[in-house]
Length: 183
Image (cartoon, rainbow, N blue to C red):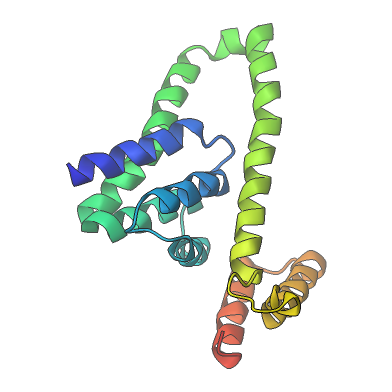
């Protein structure tokens, strides 16, 4: 029953998380609110690992979450559940590709999905921003933002924007900074 639950939860996410891996984050945060075995902080950690691992981030985070809940089988079924809807949709779309190209309804649907995907990605970004930089336990208003993390964010943002180096460099530098600053 446990493994079926993890498959179904990630199947639902796969159906509705239009926009790629980061679009799954609002659904994962909701899952963390509903189940005691998962927390928002765990999702942040899974996201960091998923970003630095090869493969699709959504699948990586799903596998880690499933593993947390149901071991290796849970990890496999969570990843499978997440990609199952896409496999079905891609299979159907491939068979109907020609009719989609000129179909005004299909064009309208995809035109509506793009802003929805952008909204999901923006919500995911804000969720990660809050998780990384916001201090829920702040006793005073001036402690609401984690200062060291905010400075790191600004530095990495500028470096990524200006230098456009390989992401592995920033991931390694972030890990090293976390160790050095004892974050």
